[in-house]
Image 1 (cartoon, rainbow, N blue to C red):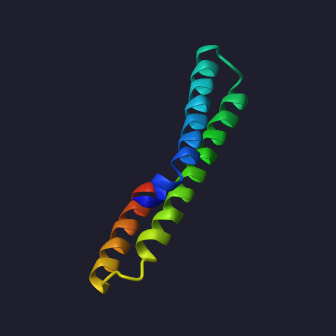
Image 2: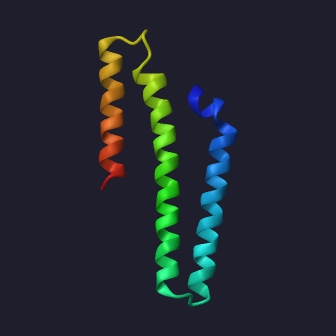
Amino acid sequence: MAHTTKGKKQLLTRVRRIKGQATALETALEQDTDCIAILQQIAAIRGAVNGLMTEVMEGHIREHLGAEDLTAQQRQAEVDQIAALLRSYLK
């Protein structure tokens, strides 16, 4: 997965930010923080995860599905994998 290797530093920065947000959510729950603040934190985490997913998926599509040297069979296998992933992610 060359696209995740090239953007590794940026992806890890995003993951660490999400980790920090999850820790803040845990702390908020432990401290009985107002439910609106908790909901806002959950929404922020969801947005961050969606952004990460979009970035990695775009790289995957460009690198793997967009590769000019793929056979029709290989391209179909890649499409099937992405379709299955999307079905799982969007549940």
